[in-house]
Image (cartoon, rainbow, N blue to C red; front, side, top):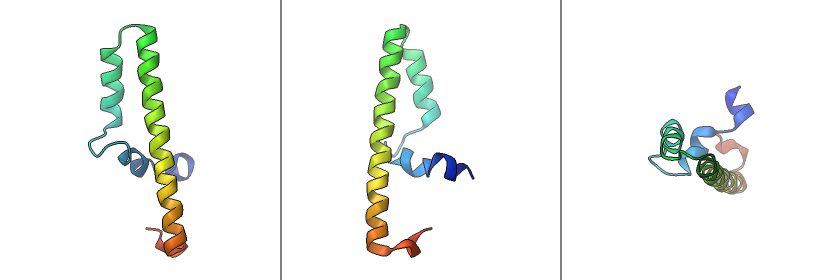
Length: 74
């Protein structure tokens, strides 16, 4: 059910970086950015990275479906 609502989150986050740990990244941003402006900028950067990772995942998924069809789903 979760994957239907959010998408294949582990795969998407894996497209950000192999060592990407969402909770550690958020905590690191929170601790390193004391002003409201720098905090917003850091979270905007994270949002952009996640959007790029999702788009990369969607492109890969569409290519897999074109090559292998729907039977390829794990």
